[in-house]
Image (cartoon, rainbow, N blue to C red; front, side, top):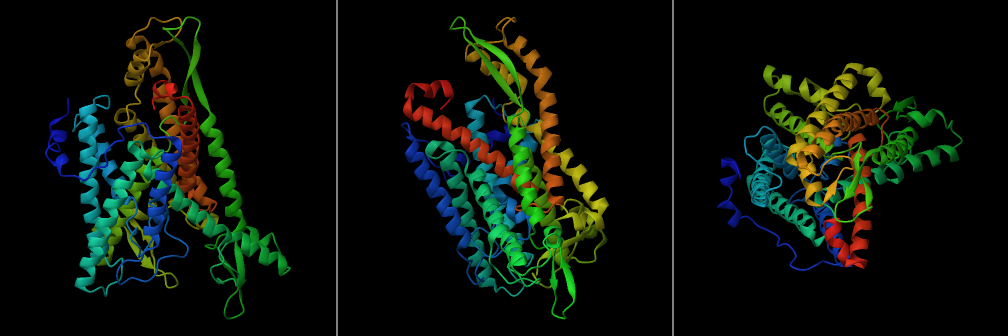
Length: 484
């Protein structure tokens, strides 16, 4: 039964906007169509400027902006931030037992969805207000313009939430949130690789591949510009520009893709048999990345909110001691963006390349420890919230008629065996994704370490879902077996 907290959302569920589940089987091509529509609408909103703001576009320097699939000065200025933040709040409440959530209970799942929608709408309003009050859109925005921008952000956030719900309820494939993250990271990787925006401080275009081709054509030393781009400044002095995309970052991006793809394939396989068919033998896989990329999403959302709140407070109470503990900032002259210089937010912000790591080894070390720790915590929490714990999985296997050879067919027996593997694999997998996400940033990977890690996981999930959808489309009788 749902806890008292979740029951509070039962009356509200009647008034919350909702996308109806399909009453018929949606064919594969139709799912592709609606998934494409959701992606197209997101990309369009990411390019539509807010009222009174300049045109969005250009490279993204803020790692949080990449992860949240947001675009400054556009309808997607908030991105998926409010939705993911709402998810974190509910996950922590469920993990602590406050809301009494049972993943196997359909009523609980429905109320949990309503609570998630409610918090998403509330967080959209809070973040939109904070952006306006904190001067994220400039300090000279008139009150009338601020009201219009607030309404635009609320409507855009609501549309994004409904697009995600449409995809997840079976009209599309996978998750809308994952789709939007993938689109944001892909856009960043393309910008960093082949963008002809510029020329930049080194006299070359922004994209690493384009700039390196210019280096080769100019007869300049290739190895020197491989690690850090350099060029002559306005005074004719040779200078290093470590924050421009370089070939080391491009190679590191490919390397991280390969490492994560390999990690996705590592698994422990338990032998299972099907009681309904004699002689049937199969294997139940327990992947190294058991809870997938969700811990990184939640960790990045937590870091983003610390970054966001501290930046807002600093813009209003600069010099305050307690605000300084949360985070201190400086504003860059060339891009006008906030850069952390101290406080908790500083240690939750990844160094952008090896140049930063050598200059701030303490920041790199603390960031790595915090990232790994939070990924482990969120991995263990998601076991209960996501219905991936040994008890729930054992119940699912027994319900499906499965058993482990040599053991009697009971939930307790299977649960005891799963307890040997699932908790250990969850901790190890959470630590691994946290370490990859942290260390990848040190080599200047395109799209940030978190972004690349999430992208590989999302692409892998989409590959599995597409294969499953094709099988179900060709053999409808397989839908029940595959859980479609």
